[in-house]
Amino acid sequence: MNDLLVISCIVGLIVMLLLIGAPLKPIRFVGGTIVKILLGAIFLFVLNMAGSKYGLHVPINAVTASITGLLGIPGIIALAVIQLYIIPL
Image (cartoon, rainbow, N blue to C red):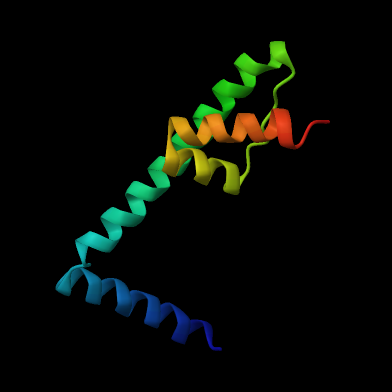
């Protein structure tokens, strides 16, 4: 595609969003979900720091951070139990 066409389409979309406004509920939902996933990654980091004395290490990736972020403390416990008893190294 022509670079000028792509840039003009992007600028047009930005102007349209500024004039009309973006729907707030989907943006708020996506933002809240991203914050929960980031908090889940932080909780997994804390779990790995505390669990290093006991040989517990849960990898921090998108799936485990999502599980922890969306389920909270039960998600952390479930991942720790899976790591200790179901997938022992």
